[in-house]
Structures are given as C-alpha cells and as structure tokens.
Image (spheres, rainbow, N blue to C red):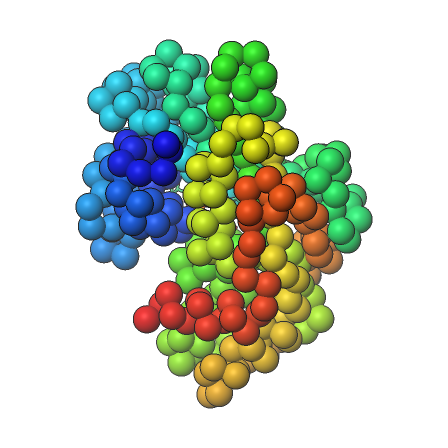
Length: 312
Ligand SMILES: NC(=O)c1ccc[n+]([C@@H]2O[C@H](COP(=O)([O-])OP(=O)(O)OC[C@H]3O[C@@H](n4cnc5c(N)ncnc54)[C@H](O)[C@@H]3O)[C@@H](O)[C@H]2O)c1
C-alpha cells in the first residue's frame, strides 16, 4: 500500500509547488524530506518536514541522502525554470538534465524508488493546434523544454529496460500565489496577489489572451494521484494536464467579483503577448482523467475563491 507512512523525498523542496505538495503528503502520514539549494523561507517552511540543503548536481551528496532517507517515492522538482535556463544554458543542462541522469542512476542502485517528475506543456513548442493531443510531437523552442523532454525520455527508458517506475505529468500554466516574480506567463497569478494586497495591476497582454491553465492545489493533487496509482492503471509514461483556458479579461472579472475594489488595466507587452498567442488553449488530458482520476477545478470563479483562500 503506497498511501501512508512512507519516506518521501522532494527535490526542489522549497519551491512554489513543493511546499504545497509536502503539506499535502504530510496529511497522509508520510515522512517528508525536502532537498533544495536554497534555505527554506518562513513562507515555504512546512512544520514536520525535514529540510536538507545542497545542490542537486552534487552526486555524492545525493547518494548519501538516498541511502539515509531510503525514499519509496522521489518527487523530482528541482529545476531551473525557463527564463533562468535560457540565461545560462550550461547550468540548465547540469541542473535539469545531467542531475536527473545522475539521480536516476543513483536511485536504481539505492532501493529503486518510484520517481514522479514534472515535464511541461511548453515542451510542445509553438507549432501546435489549439487543442494539443497527448501524442503531439514535442519540438520545444527553449533549452528548458529540451531538458524536460530529455528527462521524460530518460525516465521512460529506465522504466522500459531497467525496472524503474518513472511517472511524468506535463502541467500547463499554473495559477499560484507563490509564482516566481520573473516568470513571463505568471501575470495571472500576480494579478491575484496584487488584488489580495489591494494593489492595482497591469495585465501585460490584451484582454482576450489566455492559455491552458490549472490551479496549483489541483496540480498538487495530480502529483499525488499519479504517485499513488497502481502501475497497471497507467497507460502512458507522461500525462497532459488541463483545467480551463481563461482570458485575461475573464480573470479580471472573476477577481472583481470577490475583490470589488480591484483596479486593473491592460498594457500588452510584445514578448509576453507573442508567447501567449502561440500557447496551447487546451492540452487534451483524457488519459490522466481515465487512468488516475485527474479532476481539476474547471470553473474560474471556484478557482478564484480557492486562490484567495490559500492566501489568507
Ligand atoms: N509552475 C509552473 O507553472 C510549472 C509548470 C510546468 C512544470 N513545472 C515544474 O515543476 C517543478 C517545480 O516548479 P515550481 O514552479 O515550484 O518552481 P520553483 O522555482 O518555485 O521551484 C524549483 C526549486 O528548485 C530549486 N533548485 C533550483 N536549482 C537547484 C539545484 N541546483 N539544486 C537543488 N535545488 C534547486 C529552487 O531553489 C526552487 O526552490 C519544476 O521542475 C518546474 O519545471 C512548473
């Protein structure tokens, strides 16, 4: 039974997604170790979690941690995101790709834990239909996406040939109060944060622009559902996720319903706008729904209520 009292390791354990994932897994009684290159902040600290600091590229340290913690599941979230990857491609290769190869090799030799990994919807590139099929060819246009596909394929290879149990999901845009300030596509998340603080917000896109989106607590639940699923339930190595596709105007309207004083305007930024124009509107996610019960909030107003509640 994989659902309780397990040692679990989360790499990138101080991040936006990891802090909620740790909290969620603690509820099921697991023993959680979070590993990250940064120290946990007061906001990212979750009571009851063991925090370890270090670089995911430090192979001897990762081996030591795998031996000491003996995780049954590793959620491998440590990563440079798209902007920082493009700014330093060599480091992106080391952190995102080389370290995954090292981790999987070490995992095989140290108890062979189940590995759960986030790919990205951005791995499909821009030459895509509005509704992206699960088997759409992946031709990413940034180094971040290239490393994500490398990891997906590597995990599939170890699963097919070396008895590993590697599972991947590909999130679209994630609505979160903890979204990194510099992420170009995080403006929708930043609008909620501004509204909660009573600050005005400028959307860097036209009112009608939007892309495939999910709410962060649903993504966390997706990680948990995928991790807990019996291997026999899984028909794919990697799963698309999608919930809805709200436009910037719809997001602003939904915020105003809950924060009537919210002041906003639209000043399209050509870089953000061109990124969003080619982004997927829907990632077809029928396999996740069928195989392991992916069932996210698909009503924007419900999502807005949830995101403000998370910030209370
Ligand atoms: N948020 C999204 O929209 C989204 C979408 C698709 C995929 N993902 C993936 O989900 C994962 C988590 O994303 P997030 O939004 O929480 O990002 P995040 O930046 O908040 O978290 C990543 C964490 O990795 C840590 N890290 C970076 N380099 C490291 C290193 N060398 N050694 C150890 N730790 C290191 C960072 O300090 C950070 O805490 C990432 O793999 C990301 O690519 C996120």
